[in-house]
Length: 437
Ligand code: ATP
Ligand code: MG
Image 1 (spheres, rainbow, N blue to C red):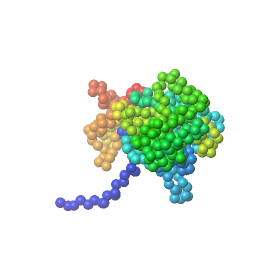
Image 2 (cartoon, helix red, strand yellow):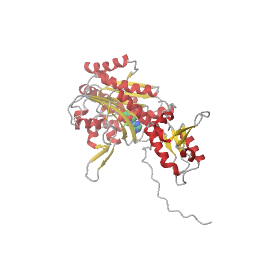
Image 3 (cartoon, rainbow, N blue to C red):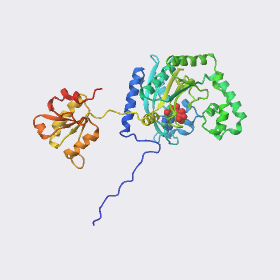
Image 4 (cartoon, rainbow, N blue to C red):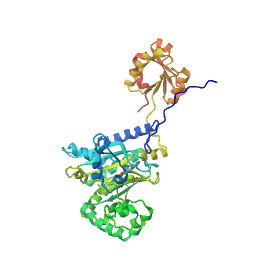
């Protein structure tokens, strides 16, 4: 036997570890969720914002805080080879939105409600619900100081869980107070942890005098008892901070939204004050937080703007979709209305005029097209039509084309008759292909 001559194959390339390709049919679930979120945001009158994926590193160091997990160990930072700028792939989008708002004087005419959808980057250990490129949907209300906007944001997220059919989502709230209250609490924290210095791990020892609040966020099991016994920030709150929290909870109560006050809840970024919250599910193991946020009244100043109160949240898209999938929710985009079967290439010009008119009229049509093996047999075209999920096959055969017609064959109802339709009047019958919305 003669040996087959093949050119050497180029070596395969793979996606970066912890960064996922989102492919059909999963990508359909992504789009469906995004569509749903866009409709939700419109109903709450939040406007879309899109900021660059790359920002100056200083934005995150200043905005999120030097002594945080993200800035200390999770950022994809690099020096631009061409001009030496220190840049970072955004690990979150709040700092970027605030930077953009300051840069473009976005609040010149009053406060703004904004939302974003997009990829974020953190160099973490990849595992279920934790990736190096992941996606967040976030909402930010800039320029509002009252607790009612904190509540509005929480109600909006809560409404989304309800619409998605997510059960088992618990809301936890805490107040991180104001800088003066944090200062008193900080001193008490340092004193407490100093007394238990022997149980602290190396990271905790290092952070104790730099950012003791971070110790409360530690996941080290050996430190949990001493963390449990630590002074609680909530006990250091003054009247105004307590009143702010009460405004939020009164609105949640009135709306029948259940929550627990968790005095141990601190967030991973330094920019938070007053209200912080998390929506947690038991369905994802350790990665149970699907949405988190809070107030960040001092961030705007931190990045060079005027003092401006603000509040927001971000949800992890992968985690929400993971739950929806394991709940078996039928979340996906609709299938095509019709599959166009083209037995002979000669039919293509006239057939494609008809298809353009159908699509213009709103029908979704998938057309059979040739591959390196040619235009398949009618039989295998019908097989394709069947597996496409389309409800109808449109047959552009020579017989019907000669009469200026196309055959419309129902694929999902065995008893329904097939009909002929005029090629030239597609706009008139396009609606008969479409499923009722
Ligand atoms: P965690 O404690 O799970 O690390 P976090 O406090 O770092 O979360 P935030 O920065 O508040 O998370 O981000 C908001 C949401 O984004 C999280 O609740 C989560 O749903 C999602 N998220 C954060 N990091 C990741 C990641 N690496 N992969 C996937 N989703 C993530
Ligand atoms: Mg994290």
